[in-house]
Length: 283
Image (tube, rainbow, N blue to C red):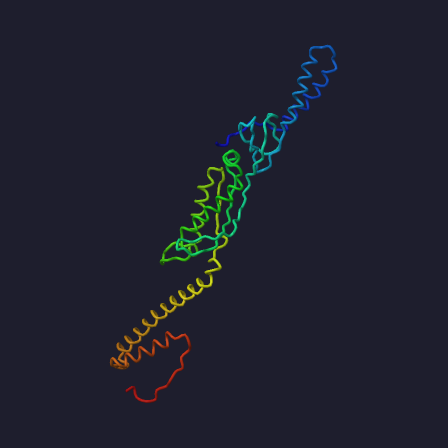
């Protein structure tokens, strides 16, 4: 069911016409015994019935019109409007709203339990679908958003498993876009447009948070040590090449090994080294 334009007139124009018809109908009732009295009476009754056709439409709202259970259209024109009094009118807000899901616990694709929540910014784009395709479109948005979030969270790991791998924590923008697409796909049938979707909370579940924190710290330490060792090896290699190229000193293999060992201790140690002055000969 698609939204269509419902019948309505400018309310001020309709009010002006009724303000003219009602006094005219009442004045015609004074002519007793005249056939025109019946006409004026019918006209007065119709004018009074038409007073029930006035309604107001606020900005960013729509009125869904039905006649004896049949959908006849929607009115989005704002201000005072008039329509057939027998039309039932239901107000639907078209304003942008936001919905924050509760923190749900779900396993990522590595089987790790995590807590995740999202904020969804949405609005009704088709009033007919929102009213007639689903029973309660607000509840539908809430339930389907959490369902999409749960499905998306179980499709990606919490932390990247590869250097350029997609993960919940490392790629928030990409994850948010994919979450928005999945929610929109579920809400299309309800006449709802998703404007934005963002992850508002992401963390490991309390039962494994401590262990995962230790793993992250260990990974960070290993990565830092790897960079330090790579830099130290490069510096040692550069030092030996420059000593040889400039002829500063000739070192045999044993002395080279001793020098490399000392330089690596200095460069890779996590504490400041204490210098020792050798006053004797090199050998």
